[in-house]
Length: 231
Image (cartoon, rainbow, N blue to C red; front, side, top):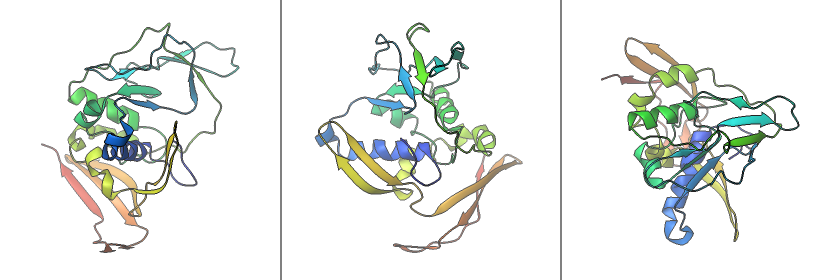
């Protein structure tokens, strides 16, 4: 998963990839998903990349930079970013990733909250096995709205995620070889840009601006705010 000349939305890319696989499952026969950051390299071949039958598995516990003399960095237990391994049933159970996180940060923590809400226990290998090297890369643009979005993660769980991805993306190109399936995806298919999220009086408001009010399906009805009232 990586961006091409556009703003990054990792959640939409993962949701779109899983959706395509499920639509073509009879031909592809993929039973285990490995959601892996492209800049991380595992160091121990005892860190098995296999699905657990009942639990999602997070295999990235310690990371050090390439050619660095410093020790490994250990991250908070809440973290599930890096490399996450799970079945489709587990992915669907939490409705996949949120589609709202643009830029860097927040989408993995949102997914972790979904696991907690659905009472899905995340398992991990030992610290001795789950070590990774991080390749150098430029820092992405951070998502300043992520903390407000995280406040309402579990409220949005059933209405924001995998089950809504079809209307949000467009597959531009498919390359299918004997070893690789590569999808080029437009994650701004409806030209809807989420600008901010604000909290007020038990409501989450998504302010939207529309870059283009016309699509192939006709004019888009302009709505500048959507309110989700907490239960």
